[in-house]
Length: 203
Image 1 (tube, helix red, strand yellow):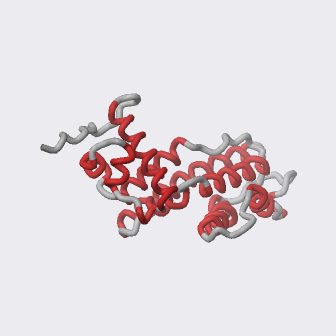
Image 2 (image 1 turned 135 degrees about the horizontal axis):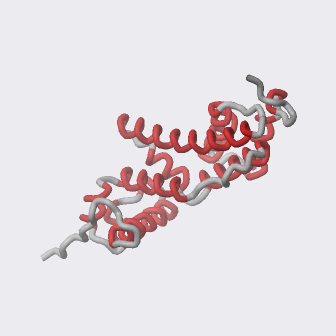
Image 3 (image 1 turned 90 degrees about the vertical axis):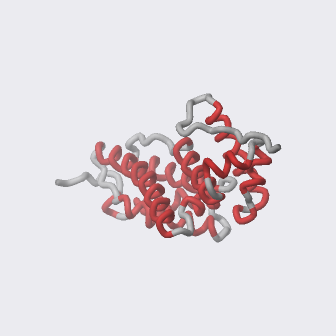
C-alpha cells in the first residue's frame, strides 16, 4: 500500500507544516535547477530531494513551470533592493547593481523564464506580476528623488536603459556584465542634461 500523501493546507501558516513543506520544495527546486538546468527538472525529482510525497508537489503546484514560477514570486517578494534615500544617482546605481545580482544568482533567469510561462494566459499573468513588482520599486525610488526636487527619468526609461540591457546580457552570458557595468548604465541614463544634479523640477 502506498504511503498517504503529505497533506498541505491551502493558506500557509508562518512556521506551520505548510510553510516547512513549501520551503523544502522551493529549496529542492532551486538546487536542481542549478545542478541540471530548468529543462531537466521533474516533479518526482523535486519531491525526492525535498523528502515529500510527489502527490503533494503535484497537488500544490501542478507542473514544474508552476513550481518554478512560485519560487520566482517568493524570491522577488523576500529579496528586495536597498531602500531609496532620495539621492537619485546613488539609489539608481544601487538598484541597477541589485537587479544584476538578482538576475545572476543561481537559477535567477531560469525562474524568471518560468514565471513568464509558455502558455499565453500564464505568460501574460507572469509578465504582469514581474512588471508590477518592477514598477513599484522603480516608482518608489523615483518618487523619493522627486521629493528632493530632482528631475527624474520615467519608469519606462529606467526599464529600457537599465533593466532590459542587464537581462539581455545575463541571458546571453555577455562578458564584463558586472556591477561596474550595471552602475554605468544608471550613470549614463542620468548623464542627460535634464537629469543632472542641480536641475530643479518644474510645474
